[in-house]
Image (cartoon, rainbow, N blue to C red):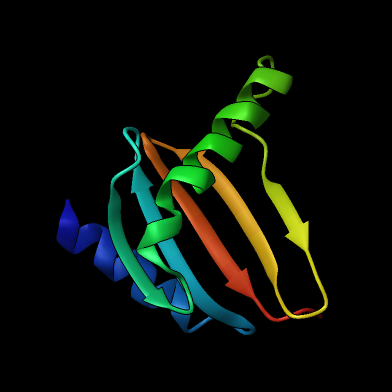
Length: 91
């Protein structure tokens, strides 16, 4: 599983504007972090994803959370027991 995750993360890092990727398991453990993503943020990333699921329990697949700032956009989504946070430069 780790090799598959690493391969997907490497693919994401080549996408336009992506500057960091963090993958977190369903217990808040950082599985991988590349670029600007910091594994210390794995707990808050998982908590945000869980809050979104509570707000919109009827939505499948789970909603994407987007946090925007002048410096960076953060996209968070859970799929198949893995939560992914993607750091992107603003468009």
